[in-house]
Amino acid sequence: MASQEIEALSSALARLPGLGPRSARRAVLWLVKHREQALPALLEALAAVSETLVECQTCGNVDTSDPCGICTDPRRDARSLCVVEEVADVWALDRARLFPGRYHVLGGRLSALDGIGPEDLNLAALLARVEEGGVDEVVLAMNATLEGQTTAHYIAERLEAFPLRVTQLAHGLPVGGELDYLDEGTLAQALRARRPVG
Ligand SMILES: [Zn+2]
Image (cartoon, rainbow, N blue to C red; front, side):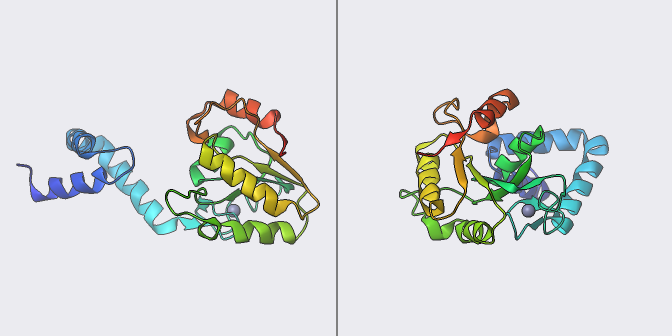
């Protein structure tokens, strides 16, 4: 029976995506063993995240400033918007600077099964950005899942009224593929070969 403190840390870690009770316990044991080297850096990083992280009100990205570093970067092409499902997708695409424009994070995907409709996504803000003008191209970079593609089609329809090019990632993406798990080469290829939605 572990102490109350260790139990508390284990159950907090077990709530993280990708970790279950067993891996959480292993992580805790590792931390105990390496506490002198690993704990100070971890504590510092957690405190910094807890104090400074905010959601960008423009694009939905998570950063230390609002608007975020991407939205305020003057070297980026504001005429090109890449729409993604999750913040992790922004990070995946931006890890290698694959996309020179700006982003818009939906915060999910349409899913009849989970009861997620258009009003549950960050869609109104996307339409407002487009309505404001100055956007020439919207790249729909949804996951290659059924729900991702349904979402892309829905957004393409909503954007039909605007004078802009709507493209989506090429179907070099593996079926069921989530952006966040793809290597940079595959992502770059899908982005380069993007095509009009039709
Ligand atoms: Zn932003």
